[in-house]
Image 1 (cartoon, helix red, strand yellow):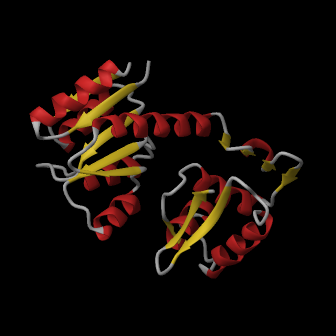
Image 2: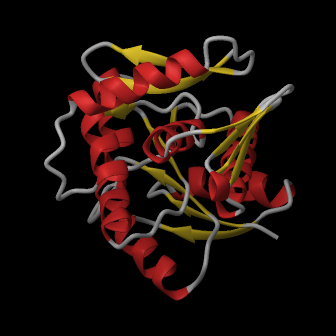
Length: 223
């Protein structure tokens, strides 16, 4: 059974989320703020975190940053009353995996939780499937209906990273840090070159494409 931790300072809302998730078959833990969430996560294994952004002591964005700094890559669904694009971008930049705006439709939340857990499971298995396209990390292979193509390492890692989180925007700097490493002296133009090569290879793909978010970065979009 998957374990989900809910970090929300509104007790009534937290209890509603917990009730709906338990009825959907999940085991649920609760935290009243980010500090409590960090404590719960240090004591017990959870498969996914749902966190409000506006919380006392440690807010949702700071919570995600601390987890990523600790190399904890638990899937995170951020929830906030704000709907501005800048707030959404900040959450994704800190390492969140998905984002919902209050008032939350709890049935949609359950669907998003399921999708995030499926992605996380695929990543642990080193395999991502989108439609009829399969990416196999161990062999750097992209498998479609009619062919298997082994991609250059960096190209594959770029595609695998973005395809693991369809719709999530990655900045060029994030991709540089994740794929080439923090200490690299490679120019960000390298990302553009690799993205261009991947687009050529995905030209006839019927499942996914890479979209440029002007002035921000890139994302994989389902077709």
